Image (cartoon, rainbow, N blue to C red; front, side):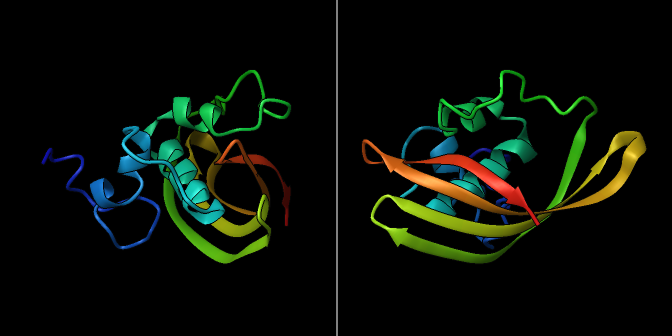
Length: 129
């Protein structure tokens, strides 16, 4: 096991990266719930894997440029709630904390919408709370 994969997962699950979001980022598994997808997307942001963020974003809402301008150090994630609306729609509310260069610390509180398409969950959009 590589040192990187034996680290704790940034998503805050308390699991090793390889046993949590790492399996999604490596392509050996796909998230089975909207919450798993949201956690994996946070981990992708935290580890610089914007390819995963783009791949899991619904095509009609994905921005052309995913960069934030200045580097962000992600500091933590708290899932507030996760709700399956029906078989193909879900919402996840979360709070992510980070630090952005000269801007300093910030807190992002969002209620995200997810859709299951062709058997895979995708992030559609979210409301900042």
